[in-house]
Image 1 (cartoon, rainbow, N blue to C red):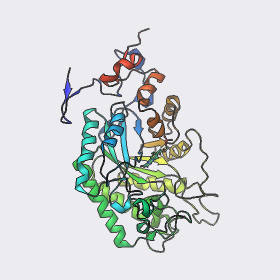
Image 2: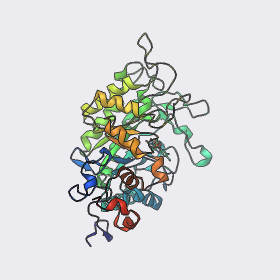
Image 3: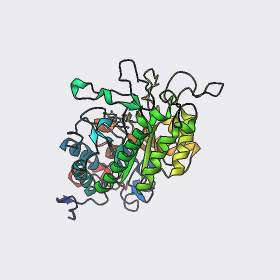
Image 4: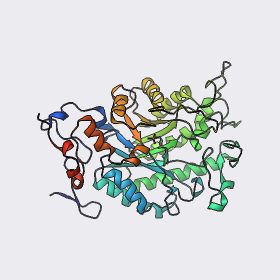
Length: 398
Ligand SMILES: Cc1cc2nc3c(=O)[nH]c(=O)nc-3n(C[C@H](O)[C@H](O)[C@H](O)COP(=O)(O)O)c2cc1C
């Protein structure tokens, strides 16, 4: 049996790689593959299927350092056929975390534990990316002082709290924006050393970039805010442009395509009243011009009174609108995608290019192989798990 030694240990090698399809010449059921299992190449990197693990904070880091929890958690996806794994939101500065247990990448000592995870994923031929926020959140839970948090060190574009019982952020001045930007760029360098295959910038869920974008949270009077969309996009675009210049592998950006606040995105007099799909389209176009490779389309998280019509695939219509506006820009759909047929329908109907799954993959890390079984595709489970999956490894010659 061939072996893989690159993670410094013996692993049996898988042929084809875990989560990839068997050749249609030998496996008639693979003559025509569902989109979910068709590989996708982005900036020269080929993702073996289109089932991506959505970033999920585990609140299990040791002073920002990944632990064995992360190895087991992420390793579980790497051994079970995900097309890509996006690691949890990882902060480039310690005070940018939402809790003391968040992941970080502000120190060189944080490289080694992440590299161990990346090497494990690579030994199992799974692409893995860093989920990178500049946090300094506006709209999210903040650890109180008694739990080791830093509610006095919360920054945002303007001094508008997420809700009355949340800390009031300090409006960032230009020097502070530069400090965050530089910290971010250093973290990108660390991502290179670690060997990540892609980076996803977190521009969603009320975190810093989203809070610069939304007119609800950004009422600055300078060139970085207020009513003009160009102002609100200015700093996020500057930051992402610098990251793009420093990073030559795939670069994704997660956005919230709406704040889900009451009323229209724009008042009849032209005033922008919240962040929504029209501004998201403009922003996505600018990101594409900068060379961003994929938009991961989420929603919400910035406005405490948000009204989200939760239901299967509730965010997909936003992904679809971005896809329509930019047919050549890969788009990811996320949010209550739980069924293989459901995921396949979004891809097949051209509403998105990949699906990101979070909670369903926590419930069942085997989802990619189960999806193959349900969709009648032959894919490779890990050698160690093959005996559990006779139907997905047997040519259907009936
Ligand atoms: C435990 C947990 C942690 C999460 N952490 C992050 C995160 O670090 N970054 C992020 O962008 N989204 C995060 N999310 C949101 C998910 O990535 C995803 O967008 C959301 O859960 C909707 O997808 P789902 O219905 O498949 O769970 C988290 C979700 C969960 C359940």
